[in-house]
Image 1: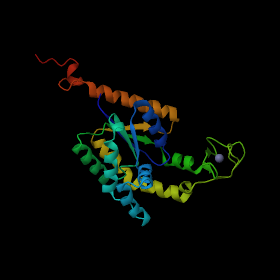
Image 2: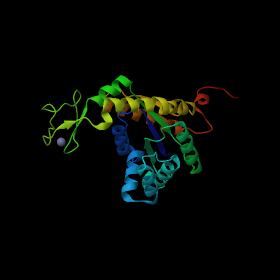
Image 3: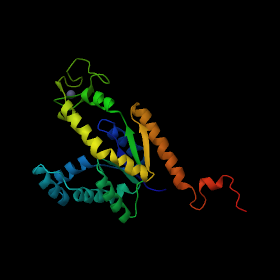
Image 4: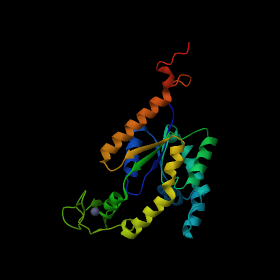
Amino acid sequence: MPELNLVLLGPPGAGKGTQAERLVEDFGLRYIATGNMLREAVREGTELGRRAKEFMDRGDLVPDELIIAMIKECLQAPDATRGFILDGFPRTEKQAEALDHELHEMGRRLAAALLIDVSEEEVVRRLSGRRVCVKGQHNFHVDLDPPKHADRCDVDGSRLVVRDDDKPEVVERRLAQYREKTAPLIGYYEQQGILRRVDGSRSADAVHDQIRAILASLRLESELPADEPAERAGGHADG
Ligand SMILES: [Zn+2]
């Protein structure tokens, strides 16, 4: 069975983390969320973590080479042999090229780039309605998952607030960043023939079903004998 190496693309609020969790369960993939990975490496004080921390402490972006070195470490772990899901990287075309290069060196390649497509209006509606409690970090949404009492956590009764990340001006900045730097990756992977679009405006269950159908068809494609492509098998008389 070939490796299922995936990149997840989509604007903030598209539900990438939720879908990744489910795919990890379905297929036993290694989930590499670069944001979490960086924080973990820093907390554990690994060599790469210490180097990354120097940049973070100065308020600088962690250089691509360092992030790629961390990803490589993850990929060499035994739990990544069936494949992986990358979330949060690559964010730019330059990073995508660097990733391709590293994978090639390791004799691996991406099976698909899954784009969870959601309109900006929907992103704003989802993120601006999110509330988190100050005590236990429990999540709510004013429309989609409202608390029983306005502005109070159902679990511990503490106050509900808007996360800094979800404030309108921050959401607008994250969307602008996505539009400018990450959206071009769609064309990059389209050209490679590995982009797969998923309708992210639907429920998490429906999105999950669509992704599973896409991955099933990928596996069928990869299992076709190399010397007998599907087009030719269908009645092209050679002799
Ligand atoms: Zn709470």
